[in-house]
Image (cartoon, rainbow, N blue to C red):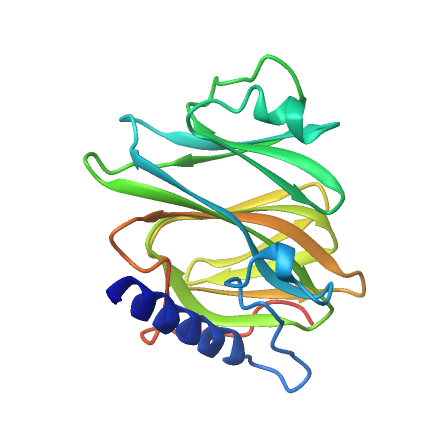
Length: 221
């Protein structure tokens, strides 16, 4: 019962974050990054692809490895103990949390994101999502109980943090460390499509509002 209540509260919280937009043209995307991707009824929005309880991770920096395969069975055969297979944007993806030098025996490498600093003794959950934002869609000020990372399939995203802005284009990546407040927006005319990870503390909600910080609106429109 407590888990159901926590999940419900987290859903409401993230809806509030996505509603905390900074321009009248921004929209609240469907899915709220909570609804499973296989239940989606529209292309636009943020949806949950998969979650994986990773337990305690080895000491030292870890990375998110992204590979593509022609069929799901091929990815399942090599995923390993910390791998997850998802289907998104017409591709079969193998996601793995591992050391930098990890490689599966086959598959097309798409990207390696990191490093993620790991806290000894902490249990981690990998939360994989997929998002489609049209021009002007924004997610207001929030933070995560672990690092967040994106791989851009199309379009352009702008991430504002207290350190400034990071702009990523199609084929590029972005990473924000644990606890950093952020605001995310889709910029430019092309629809932004991304796959994303929050590698969060299993004992904590994966997302929370950032009441102590307000973005300055540095991202282009």
